[in-house]
Image (tube, rainbow, N blue to C red; front, side):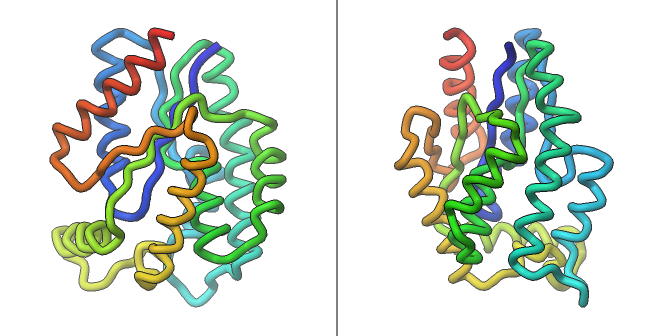
Length: 213
């Protein structure tokens, strides 16, 4: 049986960079793995991702947003994650169930019990073996997002979640930290405010500890 390792954190925390570096770590050790993400880990999910993340006049309400994430996840688990785990591969996933708790639960104020039920239903009881939470002050993360946007030559942030108010992102961070406090055996909190190389070293230590067990 494979292992599911999820990467979580507020906007600008650098988790996507670390997912790629973690893939390099596994590749060097010839450990079979896949890289994937939510939303958008399947062709069906890419359609949902566009609806969820793109700013336009047809933005979903909070309930529709929650259900779209659940639909994306159900397809993702069935089509990508479960087959990879059954094949004995390590799955490195950029966001998973905890993102829904943090963003839709704490950020949007949706019912946490309902989210828990939807997470179980959409994943068919698949749970992460390890969750790496890249934590940093939201102001620092949003500054990184703004700098990245400028580097791309854009004048405004076009991602719906990145463009939310600071208060929303503080709620999201609180949600992540509370989730980590509730499941300390699954979560590893990594200070994401430092250098990429230092963070990479911490991630690799966490992966090595899990995979040797």
